[in-house]
Image 1 (cartoon, rainbow, N blue to C red):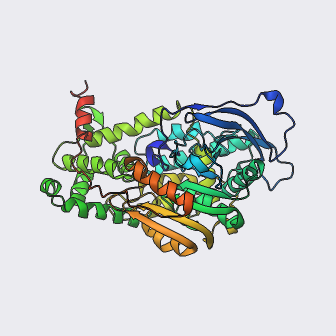
Image 2 (cartoon, rainbow, N blue to C red; image 1 turned 90 degrees about the horizontal axis):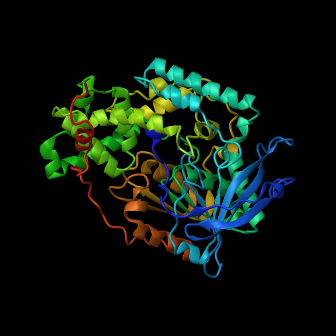
Image 3 (cartoon, rainbow, N blue to C red; image 1 turned 180 degrees about the vertical axis):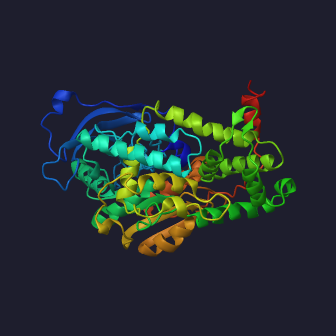
Length: 500
């Protein structure tokens, strides 16, 4: 999911604890396979039988002599009559597995639809684009300083060079090739038409596929979507500031919250300006606090915790912000221990090949005036630009907004800072000939899938079954700006006394 502490998850969170019991064919059955073939064995997914196996695809379709990759692919069979097109599930990220990080779907969807998950190359393949060099470089003080970004850029380039020296065709790990993987999967499984349930960056894949193969797509449910042409140029300082002001207005309307601070954003500014070097012996790094604060804007519950911590700091208790700073370091230490990640190479390959300007001065432009600026864009795009992650761009046809004829339902939260609804409304919806937009108030990037899962299941099931848009089960949930499990309380419990 990219650098976890910075990006967090740009996908629907995976459902932990449900059964994934893969069963892959033995090695002797995999020899001599050709591109487009699917070798399979019966296993289990989410408590039901599923076809597990490997899809064989070229590493780079532009090269006739390209080696083959083995992509993990799993198909859950429809439980009832298989009368509808299959649903291809695409999670976000990038840097997130499309198999191991993909959550269980609503049971109703499996009554009439197969559900297919095609693994992402560079993650769910025999070639994994891991960059421990980058993770190590991020473990530094003042990660947003010029010196630190130069360090991370050097580490990222070293990873790119190492992968190429090891024989990895880095130019083959891009959006266009992922679209080709899905088409190969469709053919291998014998489907005429398909549906998409896509989330966050996964919506970019679904959109590009529908643009390339319009006759093959019936319906698309897009969660936390963005227009194709913009790519990852979503996190401008001006848009971050716009979302902060929206939260500030909601804060002002809450009597209990406004009694604590008459001006939320002024409290945030004062807290950042007055950060002490330590709290009870815990170092506080302003850059790490800013990065963590940006990350927590993606979902409203986390944002409420973050604002609560800033107001407490403005009143003299910096424990919550110290916890954010400490969490940056702790998360990076955990990254290298994760079974399925972090796949920084896959993340930057998709981002940089999809049209992000490698010559733009992200370091300067993302520090525009405002409460936070855009710290994640400054660090990530600052490191990957200027030669940090060289890669060939996808064809220009993949970097534009084209008209899509498939029936599309786009579901967004109005406070989404990861994929702002403003861009979806202004840039994406006019391109969807049969598109409907559902905007859920006081919701972030994808949290409505979890916190109102029954409403989302009803919406998804009815849409895929007959094209109906039924958002009637969603209810308004006001934001609780005084969270019981506050960061301040957590900090006091974790560090009860000043460290000696």
